[in-house]
Image (cartoon, rainbow, N blue to C red; front, side):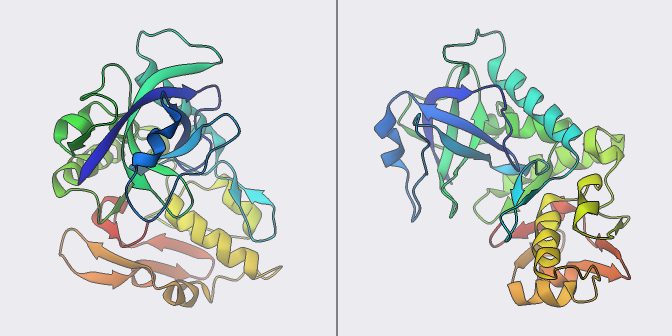
Amino acid sequence: MVLLVLEGTFRVPGAIAEGGTVRFAPDTPDAWEQLEGPHQVTLDADGHACVRLYGADTLETDFPTRTGASVHQPSEFADFAGTALMRRVRGNTELVQPLGVRGHVLTRGADAHGRCVAFVGGGPTPAPSGTRIPDTDAVLQQSANLTLLELGLAYPAFDRGLGPGIRADMAHAAASAREQGLGLWRKDVTATGAQITGLDSLADIVVMPALFRRLVDFLTRSGPETSLAGFREDLRQRHDQVTLISTGAQAGFDMLVSVSGQTVRLLRPPEDLVFDQP
């Protein structure tokens, strides 16, 4: 995978907006035109785009539902993630005006939601802004993406575009943080089982964001009905395809989720999953 280097400014405060995203504006506004792929970034009035951290998914803080309302996961760890991200990017540099931090993104392109998908870093860029570089271990080691996984403040979230070497390092960081009980892993119930009593209950439960988003969608469409009896069938109809890194086997995401009464859990660790579409 080849990454485009863009130098610019991250907006603070409120670094983490949703699911591992941060607002960023390159020094040259037309630099976004260099992005490759079928999608373009969506810009706000100040020329900032929403950047999604590649391979690292923090807890959702403002996830929109089909009804127009929004739901969230426990804010504690999302707040910690935002602070850690800005500390990693900022280093010893001063804030610039308006409130912002100098840094850079190394991006593969935009996703279907108009977000720039990137590794986020601070300090000197690995190459001049506007140039393209390969995804190497050095790129990962300098990124806030890896930092959040190491601190246990994000879940691994892999797709097929992520190189196997970088993916293995990110998986190791996440597994190590879980084994040490760091950050959100202290309260994570993705593998042990989340007790779901309705949409509102999700605000108090720490689970893999990819599972949270699918639960929100299912429960929103179910209306007042809170039973999870149809959740796996709902997942099957989404046709989310996943490759298991440990075996190379492919399966629908529905086959990797267990539902027993009102308890739902993931049967494989998040770092073992590579989604066709994240």
